[in-house]
Image (cartoon, rainbow, N blue to C red):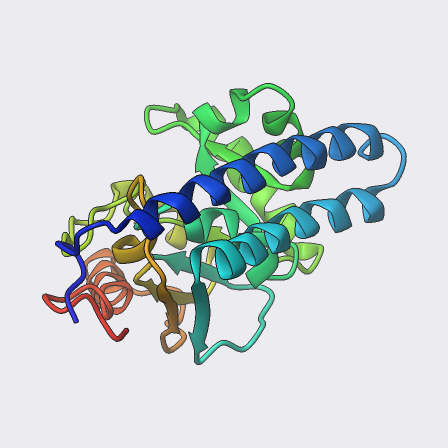
Length: 242
């Protein structure tokens, strides 16, 4: 069923308001806890970050009626997950879905008061699209160190949230990161946009579809084509399964 044009009901509005109040007000407490725990206990700090992500999924489930279904997910380390980005849902869900993910994120996110500092401590790697060679080397050095520590990498290869049904080319930086890190890639299709990427959110199921592992060392045109096709597997005219 195509839900891009589904009308909003009074119930959609009410439960969305309840979600915003519960999740965003609750997030303040989680951010304060990370600020207190980060200098004291890294394990406790990480537990709180995962708890924040799990709290988001809990609010989505019980206040919005949004469930999550995964296809083909096998937890891995030493890989680069390339994830379709349709809404904030999959971004907030990362610490809940993966084990201690290291995320390539927009540099602007790391400037958010308190939240940005917590993100850096957790393992967000700020990406500047116009960064020079020195900044790129520093970013990749940090990524390699965290991968060596047994953590998976996550990137949104389109660079930003993309409306449902759109399939823009991947950002040029993705192929460069793939080549320089020398890691296999697991593409991940997501269809959260039809439910979550709107002011008034709708009930339904957000699907994650994990594609086949793509080996390192492929030419740029091939890796981009394979990842682009795989992450858009749930992004066709019908918006994927419901």
